[in-house]
Image (cartoon, rainbow, N blue to C red):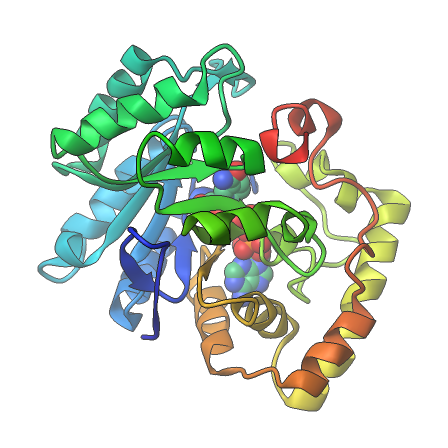
Length: 334
Ligand SMILES: NC(=O)c1ccc[n+]([C@@H]2O[C@H](COP(=O)([O-])OP(=O)(O)OC[C@H]3O[C@@H](n4cnc5c(N)ncnc54)[C@H](OP(=O)(O)O)[C@@H]3O)[C@@H](O)[C@H]2O)c1
């Protein structure tokens, strides 16, 4: 497995991480035994970085990772690096009602996560979205206290903008910023990515397949379950979906010429953007995981990269990456 290092002070991880969210939430129903088999297959292949959130299925995802690590070959926990997001407030019905970044809440969330994960430390800990009522310095300061106490190894951030990156980095070393980055979500290139690089902060890129939209497997007539985020996502609606899938067909021509898949081309493009970027892939089946890992063997040379950028120009996506109410929570978009 190829490796990358997250930021100046962060850990060395596998060059691809496994995002476990879809195994518990947001993309419709998933299969528990296949999810665990997928985590095992990832560990077998040398993937070390497992990304989760305590609110993915209200603890379901952490319990799933716990089970996967307990049932994997020996020493799986020692090899795995668990990245946990916290802070989202949920309703019994599954709604999102805000974020809590108060220092006492941070420590409370961590206590529950450690218990659910069945571990004595979290490798990277981060608030999912900034709590607008709590200065980021206080939230990051609370995680720094968890680092001092040995409960957390590294501090991460999620979906924050350049100014917040600076404020957080002034309080404690930050390993990585987790943020959406793909061929059709390139907003970080203007200010956020250069600031992260200046501060020695790595990037864990999510949505590298734009939640399946640019995987080459999504089609216009796919029926989405009522609990599937994509049913509300602007990029998956009507005319937007048609325009975005046209981009995928342009990408498919390049992938076919190279003898690789569309998903592999999209992941390889993110990998090509810098050694400081670790894509998280949201595979929840072993066949999808195998395809994603194949991207590590795909090299895009200068001609390939130019062709990809002609097929999918930087601002070509139709529709915002989140519905309007969720865009409002993104410090990275302000
Ligand atoms: N910090 C944040 O705000 C934030 C937000 C969202 C996600 N995340 C993290 O990032 C991870 C990845 O995000 P994501 O799941 O939205 O991204 P993604 O990898 O762009 O999308 C995953 C979706 O793509 C589909 N897909 C098709 N081919 C695939 C392949 N070869 N490999 C993997 N997936 C393939 C999957 O298929 P099927 O539908 O067929 O299973 C799944 O629906 C999440 O699991 C989560 O840990 C973080």
